[in-house]
Length: 346
Image 1 (cartoon, rainbow, N blue to C red):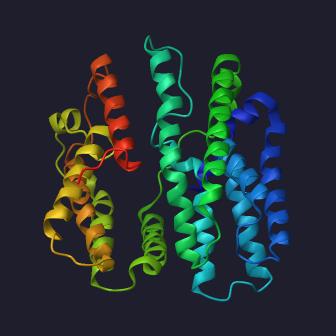
Image 2: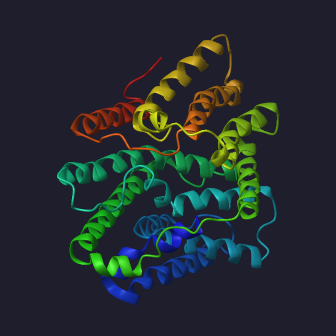
Image 3: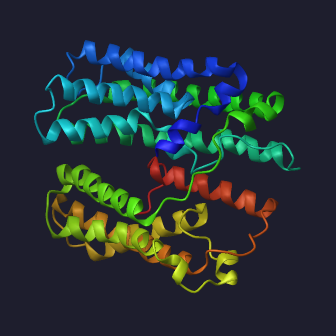
């Protein structure tokens, strides 16, 4: 995560040189202003500052991270972290101010112009993350409210935050296109390169921190019980197995033809399977207290589908022709319509 934050603003350093670090300074400044405005409490600031922080985090994940880190450290040093709810609120705010780190898993933020299908692919780089932001914005704001136990964001502000986030994303993509077109050599020089392989002890510590963070975020919603432990196990078992994947057999056929859970097709199919499985198993439920059970059931198909990827790690990549491109876009649109409740599965 720290590596992603450090290298994310390479476009700014490629265009403006060392002046690109002004975004990091802006993040720290906005963090200080936000803390002063809230009296150094671990709470989001006023709406204008929230909009500025969201836009800054989309332009540079490092700047968004520094803004959040400033707010967190000032809250700690002033003695305003007094309980579990305060810590959970800070964790929820991180998802708001550093949202860009999840977008890079959806589509590339930058794309080389060598491909003959560049225009189509780049258009989808603009459209698909926009759909994701429209879906995710409301969810992130609801999560912050749920983690804090307070109504920090009201639905009347959701649309404005969505618009600002989308405009900031489009601005970032335009700046990335300018960088690849006019400053490709400078970008290569200022980019930090790929992440260094970490030793197993460091990975194990990071894994424990992930489990702790997972529990802290989930407990306010589901409480601490057997359902939460099952949900945690379903989430971490594939990740734990990935630590020993080099000792597992590898199938080139599986690598080429098995889509994995990161693909659009698999996500759509697994979502549909999970929804209908939950509906079938909980058909007689009479109230909403079964929510944790529903989340466990939805997680089962993903956990099961992730394991075969460990046995297909290396090999030739499948061809990404026009048919695959159009099919991926159709799946994304259908997935978005389900998420936005335009299409109802049940």
